[in-house]
Image 1 (cartoon, rainbow, N blue to C red):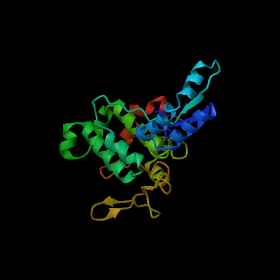
Image 2 (image 1 turned 180 degrees about the vertical axis):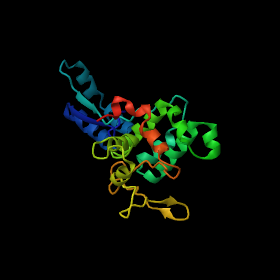
Image 3 (image 1 turned 60 degrees about the vertical axis):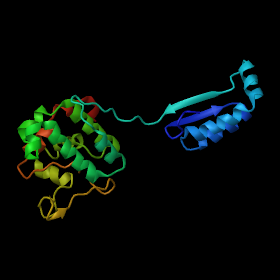
Image 4 (image 1 turned 30 degrees about the vertical axis):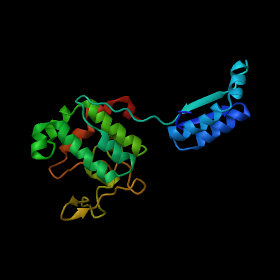
Length: 231
């Protein structure tokens, strides 16, 4: 009864007395206290369990199917991914986007931290394990809709053919008049952080104010060459 019913799907076939107790436990929230109460009631009927133990016929048959696994999280430099995981899990993609930017700056090293942004020449040195984790988290919690690998797939497609203007149109970074969406403290944020409304590949954002080399470096990062990110 310590199995968390919110994380597992359980199908059980057993004697009626046990069935009632198990059902009470499984229907309760994943609380050991409440679960333990249900089993305490069973202990008060020892004859049921002694009989079950003596029986050659299995009293309980349970098939357990694990729920969707959490994405693997690993770092080559002990980076703390909890803030990003937390933001993505609750669907706060605006916060997750900012946390991702901050993460890239920190992963790039002290020079990037001091200047407040990542220089394109630093991108190839970003640790592969950590970039893969960032990508895995974005893909998992956006249901495959957001991530650098999604942007890269579009960028390398025959239709877009590595053309940034066409990419920006495809992922919704440009207005109909051809101007780029803006995200500036004094001019507001025009990007979309709603999973249902945003185009595929819309997030995470990468600044192109200093040119497109930073974005190109991220799209070409070796972490994205892993099989797990290929469709």
